[in-house]
Amino acid sequence: QDMQEKETVTPERAEEAKLKAKYPNLGQKPGGSDFLMKRLQKGQKYFDSGDYNMAKAKMKNKQLPSVGPDKNLVTGDHIPTPQDLPQRKSSLVTSKLAG
Amino acid sequence: FLGAGGGNDIQWCFSQVKGAVDDDVAEADIISTVEFNHSGELLATGDKGGRVVIFQQEQENKTPSHSRGEYNVYSTFQSHEPEFDYLKSLEIEEKINKIRWLPQKNAAQFLLSTNDKTIKLWKISERDKRPEGYNLKEEDGRYRDPTTVTTLRVPVFRPMDLMVEASPRRIFANAHTYHINSISINSDYETYLSADDLRINLWHLEITDRSFNIVDIKPANMEELTEVITAAEFHPNSCNTFVYSSSKGTIRLCDMRASALCDRHSKLFEEPEDPSNRSFFSEIISSISDVKFSHSGRYMMTRDYLSVKIWDLNMENRPVETYQVHEYLRSKLCSLYENDCIFDKFECCWNGSDRQVYIVMTGSYNNFFRMFDRNTKRDITLEASRENNKPRTVLKPRKVCASGKRKKDEISVDSLDFNKKILHTAWHPKENIIAVATTNNLYIFQDKMN
Image 1 (cartoon, one colour):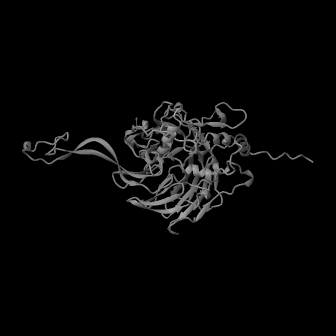
Image 2: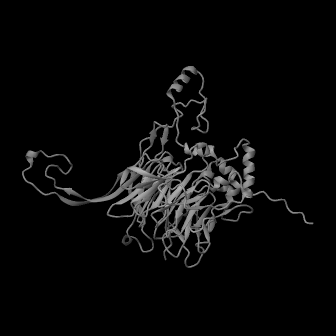
Image 3: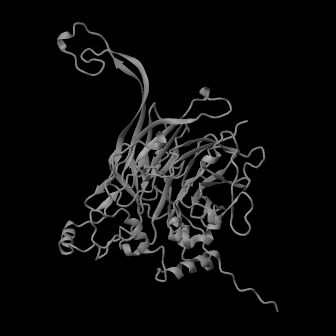
């Protein structure tokens, strides 16, 4: 009796295995709520001047924690500073397509 | 493939390229939308800096017989500016998400442009005469001393250098809590829809202080959110019909005659999924980034991450055709997820309204773009690059080597530049002229004329 070959892993499943190996805590539902909520919250910038000034007073000589890769994620520890918030856009110039 | 022979195949040649040559691209210069007007005479682009640039095709009698008119800058203006919503702590980008032209009714041209929150109706008009010979004003505008006026004259219009002016005629604001992804003008030419992640609104072009909500998929409890609206379009002929696509790969067709709120679809287009093939990436790559009706309205085309699908409006359970844009990326999904490329939103477009020909076009990476001929079933990959810019020289087809031994002139998947994405393309409504946007440059290609 011929040995049937074991079912080959599809390229997509192989990629999934790679991703899970790198990020073991990755959620089961990529299309679920958290993921979509992040998309809906694009553009959200938080700054609380009260928190900022309190923190400045307490942590005079300490470095504030630096901004992680995801600037928009507000956690309990990180207090945005004016430097962290993106600058208002500079004055507007003509598009280079028209040049 | 297309262009490799055959009397009816289109042979694409480089025509023009617009934009800066330098590699250091300012964010504001990133092109975010490209659209021909209904006659094809005008070509509009929008960018991340909120600016619109409109090009106009040269008149036929001015061009040499071996090429169609070139596109030159006609008008440019700042459509949207960055805003900050202090109440919601929300930064509102000025990036132009979509431009849609109105059909021309008089001497002026009108277009709708939108960012994430506000839609604007712009009037673009020409001025080629100005009044001269005022009694109370000098030619430079200064008021004359009335005591020096001894005679009266009638001011006359004299020709002047053509000036093209853009002015905002309507501002449609404050109707979207979420980010606008689509606008679509109805075939009645009086109303239009705007769609954000969770809602679709219907507007009248004359009325800015109210709009009707026609689709609302926001769940009562946001924790239950499972899908968002990704694109929407009105049917080209039936003014009561529109479709919207979702992040789960479905398309819903709605009929506004059925009810005021079209939460219940008339048709649901969805391809059944093979559960054995399901992976972490399945839903992400099935998210539809663009939906476009064919000119007849009989078909619609959708673009998801790896393919273009053609649907017959009479058949909901599966597409009639599927074209693989870059299937070789399926074995790169892990890194494409890590660098966020898997979320890139590619658009797609149909050829102009030639009844005999059905070709669809879409972009890919490495500044490649693809065309699929529905009749011949042939496809071609071309590249938008300054290296190919000899006018009237036919573009050389490109080929990506997915695996195995790379042939000469092929490019391997690992050499593809994923920062060079073609997300936006447009096809002239009548002629074989296409506009292809790379990150910050606009390429125009034409059919080789014999």
